[in-house]
Image (cartoon, rainbow, N blue to C red; front, side, top):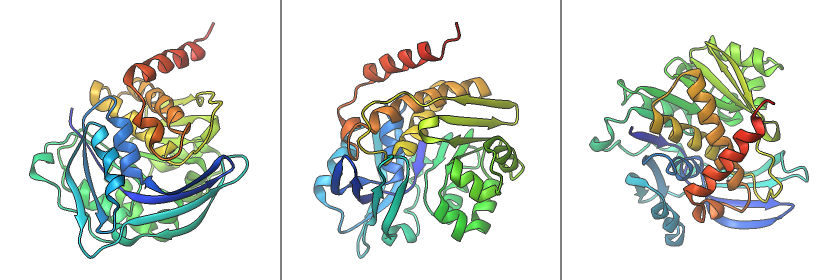
Length: 301
């Protein structure tokens, strides 16, 4: 089934205990689209500035991503983010953010995209998320991601968005910030009262929690040994999850749990190198092998 994503596409500079990466490809939409494309073709709606380097465009064409909705906008600058990971590799500091084109209107949705049934509003300004969501009234499943910046600065718009979507993806600290509920299950149920049918709360090395109107489920993280760069892990998780859902069409609570497992595994590859380097040399059989190992690990004796 058709899957569409909108979100940020940017240039990242990353400082980590494992090394540094200067001016590399990043952004929520491109991490998501790359991960999702292992299961389903992806349609991308997003914008970069006229300063976007030509060499960073190459990875766009390495995955099954339809780029008709990608705009290189004259007179604008590309979104940029600089961050530093602390020694535990879980916590990070944002050193600088330049919204640039991300603060502008999204590109128009191509007419060929309007039959998309699976819609993912990757982390970006909630106003842009609402604008895209409104163009798909017949969508089967609409899921959004968000972050602390929008919870703190655009809460009213975000609250409006929650009434228009089926699912929300965010991390545990963001869930607390949004609800002021420390327990993630309680926070998840509080978010359900805001509108969605389900919420996925990411907990980093402790896995992910699904709070659904039909019940609660939890999955551990894949026990990764080689963690180089956690940037984009949450976005690749979302991509794997939504790619799986678009491929199978199963949006039941059981289908969501299987989709979360797919997202967990593809994210475990992403963190092994900087930027999208690991996803660029990843093949679907590699994912399937690790997914089977993960399933065996979860089996109850």
